[in-house]
Length: 108
View 1: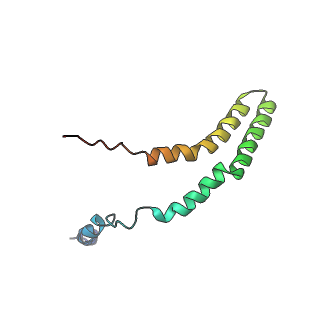
View 2 (view 1 turned 135 degrees about the vertical axis):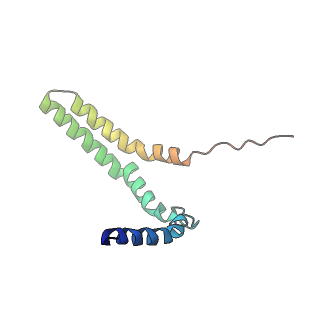
């Protein structure tokens, strides 16, 4: 056996020894993502608060200037779309990930 084959064999043996640890990597129920709730609330507040409104207005103004410079309405449209998208995105994300199916109770 050459050296490369022996090394590959040892890597395979050691790799399979750690497979059970990898299988249990995501089973801790204390890691539900709640540790990111504070930063999510902060970013959501920025996007929907006064900072978000200022950035949305800046998007619109930059789009308006770009549209005038290029003599096209598309710069303004992109600016408006970016501004509206930034203000609406947190609500869309909340609705996507917070949606639940209604509980249906069967009556005997």
